[in-house]
Amino acid sequence: MNLRSLLLMLTMAAMAALAFLNWATLAAPAPMSLGVVTVEAPLGMVMLALTTLLTALFIAYVLWLQGSVLLETRRHGKEMQAQRELADKAEASRFTEMKTFLHKQSQETHSALMARIETLESRLLARANESDNTMAACVGQLEHQLRAPGRAVE
Image (cartoon, rainbow, N blue to C red; front, top):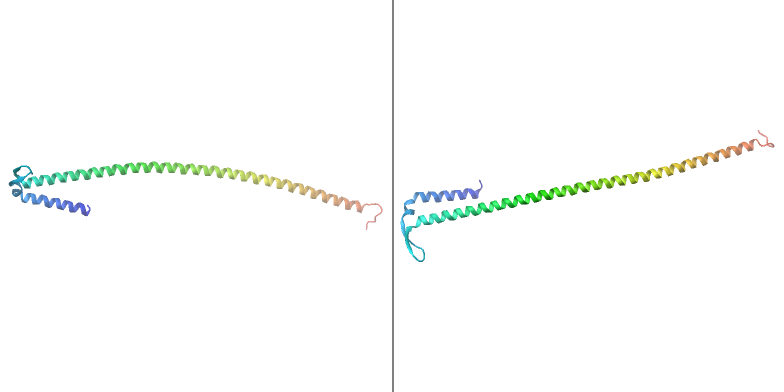
């Protein structure tokens, strides 16, 4: 229980105790002016009744205000939950889109890299064949020069 509630309860208890202890004085009739007419009534009882009525109205207003705040808080909570779900769906969509994009980029890079490797491999094979042919021609020319008729082999 917070300090305000405790103070309010103590004040109400003190008012109830004063009313109980001074009941005879509160119930004693006295002349009371209503503005236009004067009547004989227990002034203490009228004041006590008006205070009770004011207290009841105040409590009703506080309960109504608290109820409207609770309803508003609940409505805001539902809206926040809906917005959170919408944001989660949007984030999941972005992740899916990014995954698709990265997969596509990876495939494009892989296919470009494989095409480049195949080109380099075909060039390397052509170069190796050319080197083999050149080497064979050189060896053939050397053999031809070594076996030529007029040349003595030492």
